Length: 557
Image (cartoon, rainbow, N blue to C red; front, side, top):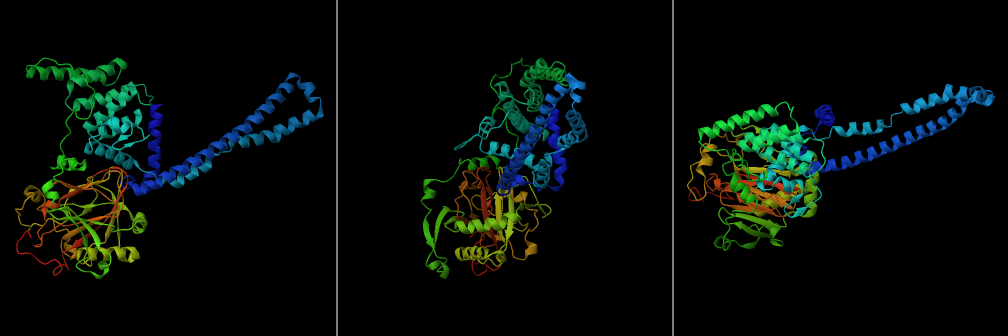
């Protein structure tokens, strides 16, 4: 039965992948359309069931009538046919009525449902989406230090829902990690699957299959005693298992060899269940991973009383800009050095909805520039979809662009288009710089600068050379939604975290007045734990700012 359930979805994917939209999981905004698609399919399924029931009821009626009739006719065939009416009706039934019944039986009420499925199938998620969504849950698990039990039972910070994961769901999560050679997460999810099965929860997957994958994953994590114990459980359940016996003998020999080499005695495995923290998470490419994730959780913030005393709020009129004189912007300091400010009530609800309306049809997987080739490509460390909006698209975009220029005092004539981004399941953008790290940047010696990071990127080509507008001097980031949990903008270098607030915007300079990059501005968009995060940003470039933001007296002014 397991094989039937396993292979049917693969056949469906094979039929639909060529028309799939792809990477649906990277945008909550686009995933909402799938909710309505599924509702329509459920309604179509109900109509199909109703048609099948109606067809079956008609066939049952025929069967009941003919059963009663044949009981009478077969009790005395000659006496029955002696009546001319009975003889006529027998000829008629066999000539036409049974043909009508045959036609009824051959009718296929599923045609409408299959047709509806075929129409919607081109918009279905593909295997990449399913894998991406699974990895997104693992990313959330890591960042916010959530164990598999919390996810399985729908217990997220500040949220308790009926969104539960079954034994089979947890097994599929573990198998996704296993197939990616990610044994750390494989162990966590396969253990949760086994725990729920042992608790009596029904499942399609067998305990032997779970133990098979779990024991090998535990072995890959270097825990031989526990791998042996799990494999023994597997052998007890299925003595004829293809691999279990061989694996057990191999594990036992390996453990004996290790103990002899280390002159140690055998210690039975811990009776404590495998959980978050049992095994160390493997290191990855990101040097500031721990700092970044701690800030996402609201830990390790470097805000103190001395720094807080240097932060103020004020009204900003853009140096007496006529459009801001009667209604100046409310400005709040978020950080002192580098200076990061937040503006309140930058976008109205109506403007936000219009921007989202314009962006939704254009959303595509967000890309990053490869530091070696300079070519735009997708990356696992940036999970979102984005769209670019021009001033000509709508008067709202013109108005927003003008507002950004009025507030910052910088021209947006040489800025990039307004980029709108929507973050999907576990959507994030790991630590990055907004500006291009050029080979001729100096090795700046200012508080908080990371020379090692600079050296890692020193061979990156000038990403904006073809634009002819210079580097990205500043970033203006609009928050277009509140986020229930997660989704902060964090700066690992100096320990700041800025939380999304709908309608507000944050602004900072990426370059010193000299044009040198401020490496302290390396920042990240934390994974969205609960909710949908919409932002729009304007990257303002150097050209045209010569008299609006003139050079300072030193390299780091």
